[in-house]
Image (cartoon, rainbow, N blue to C red; front, side, top):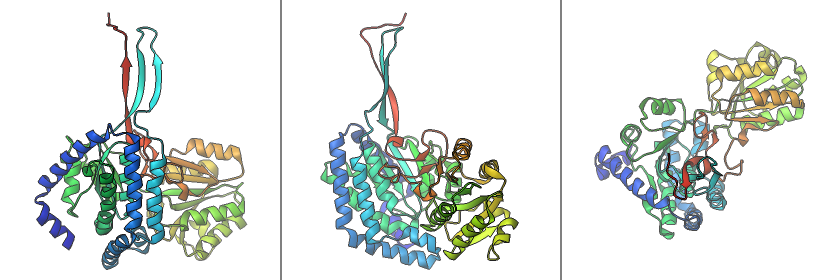
Length: 432
């Protein structure tokens, strides 16, 4: 049990009291945000970005505490990279908040409108905030800023629960967000961080706060997702693990295949858009296939492959059945030979997590077949899966990649954090 855990529970009392209070304060703040104009929200967001920049040294100091704890716990190199805050990452975090401020405010936007000829009613479908959003995430502290900014822009109050590994970093970032809220005259309770590492707080959020929390967004690995699915009594926007695939078609350009595959795996191995499996068409030139595998190995990536992949390079080790369903988040990739684009689709359907898949080919018809038949949240042609990111999609930032099919799919940004209602205007009509 960490010192932070003991202190917070001693200060805040029992979990039920703590969480109930957080929920009611969030609901009250959400009611204010629902009718807050865009200018006030943007003022808060701009101030948040300024506070993040001004607090860079403090953020790094707090992050160093988390990094030390992570090393003590034996976190992998990739997980430590997820946790690390650097001056460049802090600047990117601040710039991301500013990018959210620059987005069009979705609240109040008319999605569509029409006049109903049978009764003369004018009907509008209008975007509205969801209300109170609970977000559970693991070791990436920048999610605190991204989630807080996106929820504010979309008029929602948010309750954040970061991983214990990022406890100090997340609280320091949260303090910057609160400064921004206060400077704009908005309720500080609009963005709250659960001030304890006790896992019971997550259970209470999922199962006992249906009267104050409207939706939960989990962002993490299998264990977190499984727990949310088992315990949640509120609606969930699922962010499952990123079992992302690269498929190299027989008509792939060799250099594109090499560059994209290495980037998709190795740019940052600890993010959910990192490729975890490369599939190579059995009709692809052996020279191209060998070059792709060689480039991965030379970049420091271990390759676990089937017999065909092992035949390409003696450094490839034998893959097991588990390798096809493992999100490594590390310098490891699975590799398999498949029978054309349909073989790739079949493999992805069987083993994938419906996150992000990319085809490398110069054949447009084949690309179209892949894009139409792969049932994942994001499908790509001749591009790295590392682009599976709300910021790269022009959405400012994201809370996660929705891998389910209800409400939000793909990058979850400001628009995806709204619902809608129907506004009906009449001139005195009564129904016969």
